[in-house]
Length: 150
Image 1 (tube, rainbow, N blue to C red):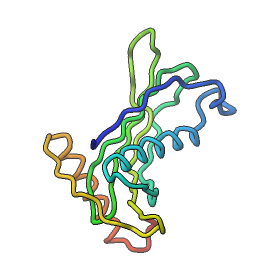
Image 2 (cartoon, rainbow, N blue to C red; image 1 turned 45 degrees about the vertical axis):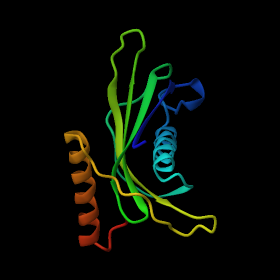
Image 3 (tube, rainbow, N blue to C red; image 1 turned 135 degrees about the vertical axis):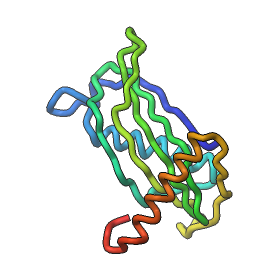
Image 4 (cartoon, one colour; image 1 turned 90 degrees about the vertical axis):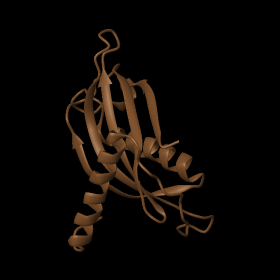
């Protein structure tokens, strides 16, 4: 499985001081969906090694239906680049809008925490191919600037 969607309601316990879902909670959801995607692809325990390009487009309101979609974009020898998009909306209207997006990298590890190879992913749809190209561009940019965190 190279993609997964988690769906749930934004609960009052996730509220920040502004009355909306806390950004840290959204980042936790992103990590959980990414982990589920990476683990289902690799069939092994995975660890987060990088989260980049996180962009918050709009707030999530308490009571909104939330969808967190994680899609495998690109695989390295032991790593998986996963694109995560968060959408939310009012269930009564049925309107969902993108709230957050980012790229997250997981590494598959053995019982000693050492990286182990993962199966390669070959994108087939135009959307998957575009996502793979975005991930590869990010990797190349990171290699070109070794001082930047990645």
